[in-house]
Structures are given as structure tokens and as C-alpha cells.
Length: 554
Image (cartoon, rainbow, N blue to C red; front, top):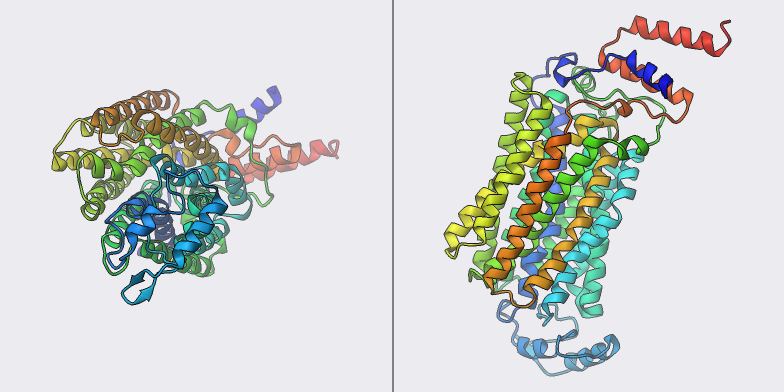
């Protein structure tokens, strides 16, 4: 252990990122910006497929919100494939549905058949919760494997596969309840969640390669604004199609699925896993990206240093904050449309508009936080660690107070304003714990993101349990919702405190040093020395001395 410390002590570790060598950014719209734009579009489409179900499900299960062309909806609702008042088995339901399909029920001169996808379903609240959170079960279970895949193969390939799989599944979803009821819908969402688990680890892996330190805040927040932007699209599209007499709720699945397949093609042809892999990047931009705070790539593949990751206090600090953020955000993402519909009395078409406004605020504020954080860091007004502390506190603590206030108001406009402030300020986490993973270990940002996201989403699985036990089917009781919002805001307060205590803003030693064997130790030491500014002559001198030692001084 002392030998390891001696090796570390000879490396001039920068205490602040600002001490790293500076490089002038190339003028104009560079290849790195194209990559950021592609990732923004892909994440937006992925989030649309992820988020729209909370609105679409209201149309799928509500009387009177289905496609107005459906003339036999009452019959189909009363004899739904999984009616909550029946205890029939799945096979019995299929037989019943087949009988219904043969009835002489017309819809604008068309015979209603087994494949009438515009019908609605009388699913109970617990079944709806299972459908909503099936995605997150798959998302959580596949997170670590997807992070390791991104680490091994780069971030581009996993995202392409995720987009292709999600596109196909989304297009097929309107037919799933007809074939297998709500259970098959759950399975489809489970598979979508498993493939979408690749998004965040892969994007973090790509950011570790493509984002220069001086632009890290802007590029990362620009890409990750795809999350609120996609949510905005989800609520708008779902609200429009659900209330449309021409299209109906299945159109949301079809449109988002087609867009996903298109994004897959765009990323495959125009994206690249690393700057060096891109065929048209300029030498000037390549040097700027790789030397202005980005990682030095060692040719040999290295194992993920899980021992160092799992024993790192800064890592667990950001994981704690990630958990608090995920719990609060999942509550808002999955329950706000229902809350606004049942408690505030907002109809589904207006629900899409009102539910989108907070995410518009989140989108704009994310960009604001990104530019401000880079400005403060580049002007050396604050250390990176203090930037992360400040932004995260705004995003977790201050926004939590607005979340509590939101649950106590009765006026729709006041509630929307408070929710806008809540999610707008919550975007401060984008330059808080969220980007801190790249600060600590850009070489292993993907696996770290995967681990943190997995733990955070596991903690988020408590949301449906609490909603079912506290609110249950009494969804119009505002006092029960208040208990939920206060509870989750308190969790955000506590987890942010943990992050503030343990946060670091410097690259950790194990980002360059794996400790697997002597060869890896030396190889990563040289990479670290070069990254930290040790002259090439000194590096070559130390290499020669180490080689002599290894050969017995010959």
C-alpha cells in the first residue's frame, strides 16, 4: 500500500481543474456540437416514449376520452379484457373478447373487431401503477450491464440499439393489450426500460470523451435538456392525440416509435464514440477536446476500478443526492397528470398543456445553469466543488419548498406557477451531482452513472408503493397527496446535505490508476502524468528507469 502511495506522490495532482493546460477553442459550430445535438435529439425522443404514458394512460382507461369515432365504447368498456370487477383468468378473458369481437357493432360503417385498438380499458389504479412502473423495473435491472457495455464498446452503439428496440416496441404497443391485456403492456414497457437503461451511461461515456472541461457545463446541460424537452413533447402529443376525434391515443405510440427509428439512423451515420473515430473532425478541434481537460486515452482496455469507486466518499455523496432527486422527479413525472386531473379538475386536453409548462421551465433553466457554471468556473470565481454544492442545493432544497407549496394550493394557475418554479430550479442538479461524475472520473463516467442511476431508480420504486398505500383509489383527496409531497421533499433535503458534505471537484487518482497489475499501474501513471502536465522528457526518463529496474539494471 505504501508503494502505491509513493507512486501517487510523484504525480502532480491538480487540486483545481483550472490548473490544467489551456487551449483556445476552435471557432464556429464544431463536430463536438454536432454530437451534442444528436444526443439531445435522441434523448428527447427516448424521454418522449418514456413519459407520455402517464398522460396516454388516462385516455386508455377513461370513459369519454377515447377516440370520438368509437361508437361501441360502452360495450367494450363494460366487457374489458381485464375488467377490475372480474376474476376471470387470462384465457377466459380471451374467449370473452373473441365473442365481443363477433358482435354486430359498427363504427362509421366499419365492423368493430378483435383488433379495434381505439377501445378503452377499465383497469384499476393498482394495475395502472404496475404499467407505469414496469418501465422503471426494466430500466433499473439493466442499468449496470448497460454501463459496462458502454464502457467496453463506447456510447454510440448502445444508444443505437436502444432507439431501434424502443421504436419497434412503441409501434406495437397499441396491439399489446388486445393480445395479452395489461400484463403484456407491462412486459412491453419492461423491455423498453431495459433498453433505455443504455441512455444515461452511454451519454456520460460520450461526454467523458467529447466535452472539453471549459465547455462541460454547457454541453452536458444542452444534451440533458433532452429530458425535459422530451417530456414537454410527450405531454403535448399525448394530450393532443388523446383528445383528438381523428387520431386517438394509439397515434402517440406510433409517432414516437417512428421518430425513434429515424434517430437511430441519424446517430449511426453521423455519430462517433470518440473524437478520434470521427472522419471529418479537424486537427485543431481534436487537440482542443483531448487536451483541454479531457481524459488521456490509454490504448489498453482497463477494468473498471470498482473497489475504488465503492469506497469513494464523493461517489456515495452524489449517489445519495441522485436517489433523492430520482424519488422526487419520479413522483412528479408519473403522478402530476393524475393529480392535476383528479384534484385540480384539469381536463385531459388542457392537462397536456399545463403538465408541459414546468418542463419548459426546466429546459430553459438547465441551459441557464450550464452557461452560468462554465462562466463562473472559467473566470475562477468559485472552485468546481463549490459550484456543484451551490447548484445542487438550489436544485434539491429550494425546489423542495416549492413542491410542498404546490400540494397545498387549490387554484390551478397558482399550482402551475409553483410547479414551474419547482422543476425549473430542480434543473440545478444538472451542474450539481449529475455532472460531478465526470469531474471525478471521466474515464469511468459510464459505469459510475449506471451504478448511481440503478440505486436511484431502485429507491424510486418506493413511489408506487407509497402512492398505492397513502393515496390508493382515493385520488381526489388532496390531503393524502400533501403527505406524499412533504415526504419526498424532506428526502431531497437530507440527501442534498450528504452531497454537500462529501462533494469533490477534482479528478480522482483511480481515474488513471486501476491497481490490477504492475503493467496497468505504470501505464496509467504515465497517462496521469501526461494529463497533469509533466513534461514528455521526464516521462521518458522515468520509463527508462523503470525498464532498467524490471530487467535487473541491465
